[in-house]
Amino acid sequence: MDAELSSKADEWLSWDENESTREAILKLKNASSWDELRKLLLVRMEFGTAGLRAKMGPGNSQMNDLTIIQTTQGLLKYAMASFEDLKSRGIIVGYDARHNSSKWALYVANIFTHAGCPVYLFPNICPTPFVAFGVRHFKTALGVMVTASHNPKDDNGYKVYWSNGCQIISPHDRGISDCILESLCPEKSSWDISSVRKNPLCRDPMPELLDAYCKLQKETICFTP
Image (cartoon, rainbow, N blue to C red; front, top):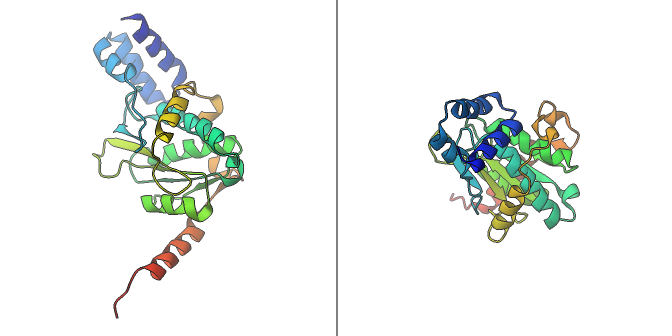
């Protein structure tokens, strides 16, 4: 095992607090499965204008608790630099019915509320357009939707919306990506999602948003007699 791979493996084992993904990396290391470890640890998911989308599993190349935390810490850093009023505007967070989606939405909400930002967190699964609409309705700085859309069931994703309610474009994708790489070490507080929904900064957007969304649809859709 080369020095870089050894360092990445030890780094992962020291950072990951998810028992399942940590154990998977440890087993591969103990079994000297270096080729597999290289695929998982030396290649990192690329954050682009569509955010992240990849298979769920251990390592830097896949979607898991640690990479979600790292991504969100990076997004927070970029948002702090981009919006002077982030702590008053906050973000809106939604998720689909895929495995891990609800938990990862809690990680996003936890990291932002811990930084003093209000978070509109959906109480249950929601359609992706609700997040885009919610950004504009509540005038939040950002929106995050945990979803992999039409991808296979083993995948998941992380989509970011800018303050205009649209999917991010360049150069925001590169800026967020750079901030992620500067925020890889997880804060201890980032792992604790036990009481996120009880945080006074965490709000349920659904009642107000659903009414506003339906009202807008009725006003803009042309119904024939």
